Image (tube, rainbow, N blue to C red; front, side, top):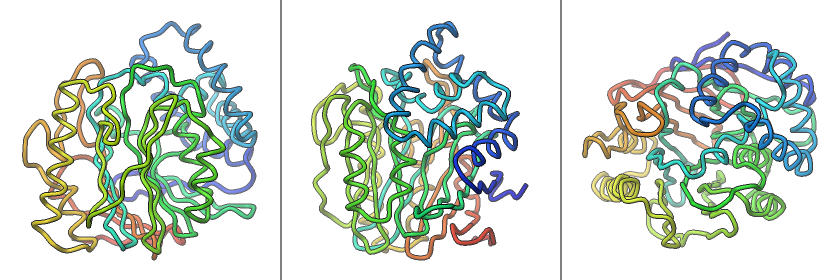
Length: 350
């Protein structure tokens, strides 16, 4: 198995069942560890997890039945009850009330550059995986960073479209198409207009922020607040987002709000200070360690209720070339390693 920047890279081919079997077999041990981790995060009896997962299985099947086929195949190959894999794919909806401080994303206006730090619990660092999906139909090939067992997350495709997202805690029910399922559907889009149509088809029912960008510099950022959604005003040299609602004053947990607004302000200040709008500038912003405890690149520290929270990995994407730069962990001095959606060739960049 190839490794890029400390992360395994797997390639999935064929139809949904074949892809799922490959995913489940290759990552079986990691998927079992995912179940152990998220069982602890959920803090629910398995019977209750399965009851909620049954609802999301129905929602996912209605939205895109091929995804249900893929999830069922992952479960089969991983020797796990299918409802656990549905629960993993709806993990953000299970945890929607959790006051998590994580993730900083940004796009440079008028460029093909999109990037983010994915902050979460330390136990996920040895589990996260790069997945390349070679399409067998008219959808683009996909390269994404994801958690084993989860079929969609952060990445880009061979049509020059990329997606990033932030978790947004909320005190409302989130019973719609799970955000990770929506991210997979967006990664199968060929254009911004296709992405907007996909979001409309998915409807409401999640709490998250999603940024979609295209190689020609076109982009949009959408905040989802369970029963409604808001599109961010698009102005300035950098469009950035962290972990609070910007367009509406919703569910502002004081600790989360302080952390999130500190990071957002820091991104804008660094953008102004650096001036450049190139790949190296984006890497420098994502590597910033100013404001310990509220840093963009955050070392792990204890945060209730999940545990040791910090930057698990950093990603930059050039949507024009199809190149993804990845760095595992929160060593701000570490190099990014690069891989393309078009090929598995890699190179190190200092």
